[in-house]
Length: 199
Image 1 (cartoon, rainbow, N blue to C red):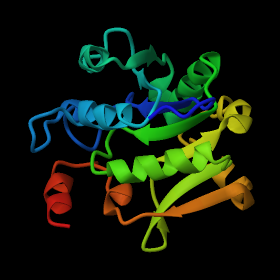
Image 2: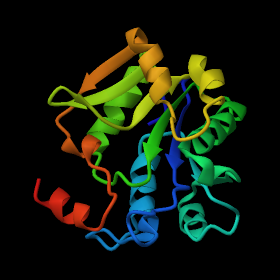
Image 3: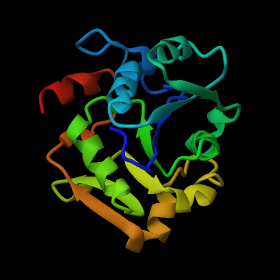
Image 4: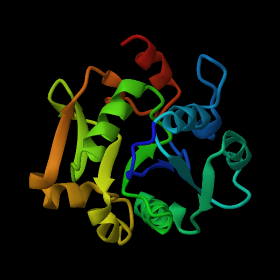
C-alpha cells in the first residue's frame, strides 16, 4: 500500500444527519452484516496510509466502531451546517499529519470497488493534481486532491463541499475511467440498497 515518500490520507465524511433515510444510515447493516460506514472505512484502510473519519462529536454513536478498526476520528462541531465544514476539518487534520494527498470519501457509498480506490491512489502517487473516477463517461466519487489544494479545501463551508473547486479548476482534473458503477451509487433511502443489488 505505502509508496516510498508518498502519504495518502483517506477522509471519511461520516458526520451526516441521515434526514431522508429515516434512521442513522451510517450504522445500517449491509448484506454482510457490517455497518455501512464501517464497511467503507475498512475498504479505505486497504488503500490509504491512514483513514480520518469526520464525525459529529466525541459522543457520536459511530465513533467506537471506527476507532476499533484503527480509524482516526475527528469531531466537527459545525457538521450540521453542511458538508463543507466536515471536509475542511478532515483536510486540516490530514495536513497536520503531513499528508501528500487526500481521498474524500462519502460514508454512504459502500459499493465503490477496491480497484477504483487503488487507481485513484496510483494517479495521485504519479503526481496528478485532482483525480475523479468516471463510469460510462459520468463522474463519481471519491475525489482525490494533492496537497497543493489543501488550503482551498480548508476554506470550504456550507453544503458546497469541493464542487466549486472542481468547477473552478476543471483543467487540473484528471478523469480516471473505471468499470465500477459503485462510484455513482450513494444511499439516501433504504430502497437504494435494493436498487444497488440489482445493478
